[in-house]
Length: 142
Image (cartoon, rainbow, N blue to C red; front, side):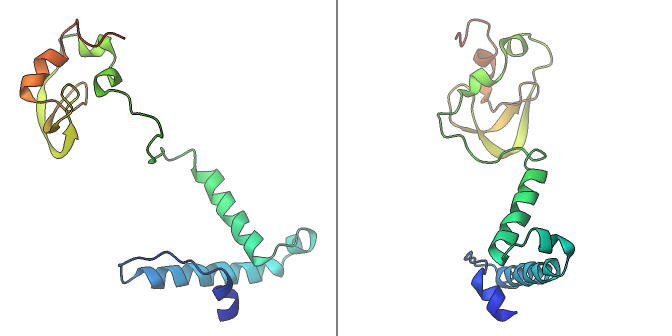
């Protein structure tokens, strides 16, 4: 078992004390499942070595869960200007726009500086002095 586990060991460095234990348990579970797979009828028709078996497992989980989670990766291009993320119809309708304090920092949609307030309806960060100009009609034409 140790020899099989050492062939494809998960090697991600971390300062967390529990990570090596967690990674080892994943490796052992994967190795044991590969041994069980080799005893099945499917292995006789479609034999897989341990590396291919691991790849099949990873691909299966990737295909199953990729559509259910939004991407957390950042886009490679320049992000859209924050003011353009809110449609003009919502931004300029002058109804139910209230400034509210938030726990985390965001970027102001108008000036780009860090702020701990946002428009409740537009859901963009705004300073008190940027709130009114952001919601004016003549601003941010394409």
